[in-house]
Amino acid sequence: MGYFDAYRKRLRAESMGQAIKLDTDDNIIREFKETPAYKQAYLVDENFNETPLDVRMINVDKSVFVKHFYLLPETMVKIGQYIKVQEEYFLIEQFEYNSASPYAKATYCNQVLKLVDGTPIPCVAQGESYGVKMTATNNVVLETDTKVRLIVGDMPLVRTIHPDFRMIFGNSTQGIYRVGDVTMYKKGVIVLTCKKDKYMQGLDDLENNIAWQPDYNYDDKAVAQTEIDYDITGTREILAGKEYEYVLTPNALCSFAIDNQNVTVIKMTTYSITIKCNKPNEIFKLKAMIGDIVVAEKTIITMN
Image (cartoon, rainbow, N blue to C red; front, side, top):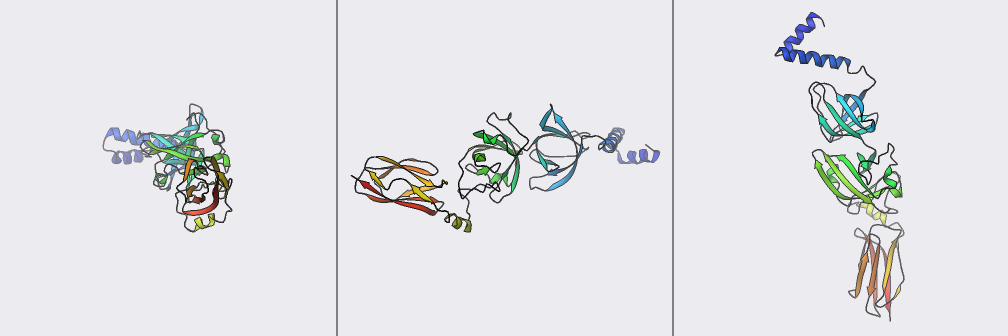
């Protein structure tokens, strides 16, 4: 360091200790990129704004999924933000601030969940063992696990996700899940506990990984749902006192309505209903509805 540089540094410092720190910081900055671990990354905030970020990316305990990101002096990040490296996202779950050498611990986002409008949200998907099963591809462990936990950053868009929100992974009927619980177990991070869900033919968009949402107001799109040729399968003539099952085909999340008080509902699922009528010589209609739209109906007669 030349005399002029040293003099300029003393002017910046308020004490000898601060001058030493400034000297250390300058050395770190000059040498920061001189390593294979250096990456030009981006910090992604809760509004998906991206800011250039210089990092050194190091594996944690030989894991390819969990990384330490060492940052330039005085750099600040937050838990729940993402670090983007070559189109791959890492969720920040810990941040250790040391003014000379701050670093973040972040986990690779092995999945992307999509909101109803197609907005992608990077997330960490863990299988039933919660933390063991992870894969570097988007075809994930989700095809075999019946329950997964998704860890996402706390951001305004994520806060719109609620229990019963549905999602699709891997463009597959085997990768459809429904949120059962939403938990905020620490600041900056939201955990979605999900279970397997059935494919809604004609409603779920497998090509784009966008799941149909039962409580979303699709407006004009809801009209298009009626263009699917739905039918209620099951016998038209039943015996009084006997139980009969009726199923909406193709299967879709729906509700049922019956215009007769003498009919008892024994069981109802997302796309089927089991009923019993104790009174003979009754004629009634069974209706299947998606939202407020009647998509199929069947006239049923009770025989002696």
